[in-house]
Image (tube, rainbow over all chains, first blue to last red):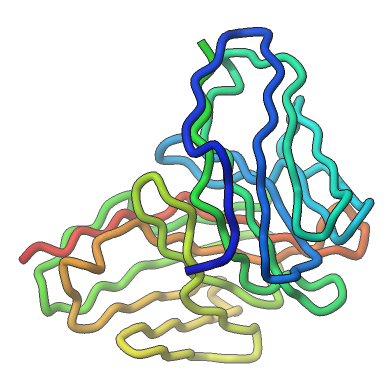
Length: 115
Length: 116
């Protein structure tokens, strides 16, 4: 079992609310990622980080933002939730050499529903 | 455009048989390819990684092949068991945004059901 944690596991929230999805890992990995996955669909990368104070947007445009102030912590924030943000959000980390990304360890995910 | 295709959305197989899942890709030149298992409502779990210069990789009942000429990977589960029922994802690394970084792109997955 990977040492990567996400909270909350499930979240139902009204439109317009600000939310933060938490992700923490205890493996000391420099690289962390956020993916979005709809049922039956592929994972899409929305944010990644190669270390403290490093964040980049992924290939799927997202209105969310991330921060990386500590190696082990990579929270994702939505300033104003909308029904279109309803999805499964998966956090992952990896320990690759240089720019290469080796196997990724995933958290259990947060299922977000915006009403 | 870049595309990853996994042979079918669902595959049913009898317990004890070998399950074979296919991953085809176009317009990629991956340095390596990975396979993950995902159970409903959970995050993917890494299974195997195979590099472009490797033809085959094995781990217990799992075997992966990688043919860069055909742009295809095959994932085999021998002596399949009901506990092997899950969705299996293939993932390719690729250079991302010209920033000298490599990211994984995932296929949609194949849902395997092993029938007792």
